[in-house]
Amino acid sequence: MTHSENMLFGMGNPLLDISAVVDKDFLDKFGLKPNDQILAEDRHKALFEEIVKRNKVEYHAGGSTQNSVKIAQWMLQKPHKVATFFGCIGKDRFGEILKKKAEEAHVDAHYYEQNEEPTGTCAACITGDNRSLVANLAAANCYKKEKHLDLDSNWELVKKAKVYYIAGFFLTVSPESILKVARHASDKNKIFCMNLSAPFISQFFKEPLMEVMPYVDILFGNETEAATFAKELGFETDDIAEIAKKTQNLPKENTKRQRVVVFTQGKDDTVATVGDRVTMFPVLDIDQNDIVDTNGAGDAFVGGFLSALVQEHALEECIRAGHYAANVIIRRVGCTFPEKPDYH
Image (cartoon, rainbow, N blue to C red; front, side):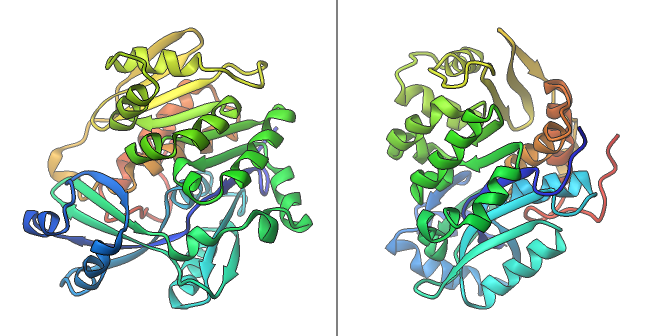
């Protein structure tokens, strides 16, 4: 079975990344950690006004899930529109940019467009090889299951897919949409993937996260997210292999598929459950000087992984493709990529 149109389905928060190199004073002024992802609060309003005035500011289409499906599409190249994406934008200039960028990436994006809220943005505050992300969801937070996902023409696209991916970030927006898709995948023995996405998801959205967990076939996360998840669930261990194992063994609906847990650790080995064992996969070597910014590295890893997954490759091969994509992305600003992958 080769990959065809709409085989990969993603749903999440479409955001326009506003990315700039800042200094420690800037981070301190807005109470940001160097490497974190948070939702914007009132105290961050000025941050968005200030960051656009920086001399080297760049605008890129972003949003975690949207980044991942774009990278998957880029890795696959042909046919176009293997990846479908759902999310909510505003009827404005930023929304138009996101539509244009999705089209250029050959992703079949079907946005729910509304005019209550402007298109969401994400300030990527870069210091060295760290990135602190502050997301102002705005329109992205207005996604409505009954206004979009439930429409016959849209649900048909969901049904066409074989692999589903939704970042944990979307749990703050529409857990009912996630559950509908997750249950469909589970009932039809298709593959549903999710991401822990950020420490705050496990901390403050644990309930919806654990409601979806029984349907999760493949769970992604990084070392910080894994540690926070373990703490929230009372695993009483900070050994990442042990956390992966315990996460794999959480209750699961579709017993035909054993859950796979994949934790990335930046430059350290990626940890994955392979059957009943936990295996370490070394990442590709990169010279520190070649790292431009790590924003999008995790999303790119997932995108590469998904591109191999829709082709029904083995787990080891999916991880290799993920490592390749992440290695390409960290050499560039934001989650951007060259015209074609050089991957074999």
